Image (tube, rainbow, N blue to C red):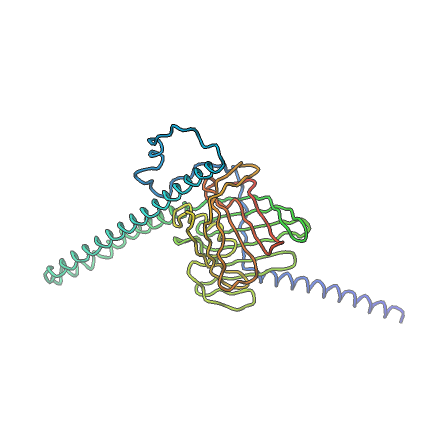
Length: 386
């Protein structure tokens, strides 16, 4: 009779422990199911990126501005007053911007001329084939049978060559994207006092699959991670899954073929070329490096961005050409992108970016502003590549 209560207590304790274990297993299963990501294995980085003159994106104009400056008479000494120095610097900056604008306009004109020439050639070829079909006499049954028999063999012979050509084209297009890269930033900020930490943006590609991962570690606040995964296409990055994680919380957006599933389970129509908060950094880098978007002061870049809370159209204006002081790279020439106010803002988050042509057009500074007294500032420290 004495052992019965003890036995009951032991059984009750075992039941409680089993319940805890089952609960932990269930929560683990739910966490795995909630994430649509399959993280890539981090690569081994073998070199540090150093600043270098960027390759020309478009052909230089036939008459370069420097030749005019060489032939100009300059007998007077350099300007000594601040006003004269500022005026000369402003004149040089305007000359550079005008040269860039001319280069972009000439590139667009060349592309338009090539497209028109190609369309004209296609029209002539179609007309030639139509006339040839009209002039061709009715074929005999024997020749038709012969043609039918030879057609499959010709198709079989052409198929491997076509497949090889397409594969070579796809490989060449993929190779134009950056190699695996990790950008490391020093982080400062303000939120009820000064903030310090570090951050990194990591880009990986395996075939036509990609992953962009932004990790920001803030002292006393832990680490927040933004991850984007998807496919590399001829038109740019195509995100499939995006997640934001911080201690104790995960938010996601899943991007399908025609719709975007938000964190609350609702779906919205998928806009063309939609990106997410993490993928936009690499997408913009590639657009500037390949000339798809001209990196010219005054130009604006439009991007649809999908986040767990919704999908919005962002417009980044290139507001200036600025010098950025960095601890490892010294002074870098950068282009400053600033978002224009969006139609229906979801909160007060504002993201500014600075891209450096001498560092493969990568973002060397990222500033997030959440209010007049709340902000994070990421400035490049060093860049690793595979």
